[in-house]
Amino acid sequence: MTFTKADEKRYKRATKCHICDGKLGDDRVRNHCHFTGRFRGAAHNGCNLNYKASNFIPVIFHNLSRYDSHLFIKKLARNGEKINSLPNNEEKYISFSKEVVVDEFSNKEGKHVQVKRELRFLDSFRFMASSLDALSKNLSKKQRKKVKSRYTGEQLDLVLRKGVYQYDYMDSLERLKETHLPSKTAFY
Image (cartoon, rainbow, N blue to C red; front, side):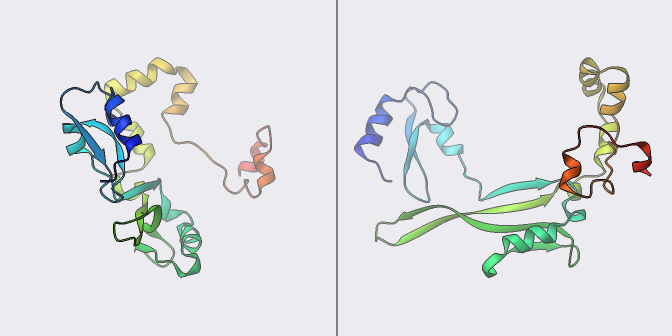
């Protein structure tokens, strides 16, 4: 572990666990990154033992495989960089991922080391039993009560049903600048 004099002062002055923000007691330990060796802060022994850095960062899109996920992949794979994918077919992907550098350091031998994490793009629709519309209809009584406490009448009906979006009408960025709804004929 890399532990400088400044780190030691910070450790001794700490009154809260840097992981859970709880008051530190006799179970104080030095938490550090197991990749870089850098001191992170004072922590409870239990918090330190249970602290685990995830190896991936989830990026979740609902219904990603139905959208142009192949366009994301083209941009992510620039310069021939490796992309791992779980394809449905050539243009639809259930999941894809790419490693990115999140930190760099020199080890004890003076060798330059990169710390990488995986960006994992997931289609939440593929992991759900049904659509968001169907799931909203399955709200428990307690959940419905909470929604009904905030919305009533027509607003409640709108919150509890699937939204409408006119994809054919939204054919340019200029359409997004409009300040009023189009006529009904634009929706047919």
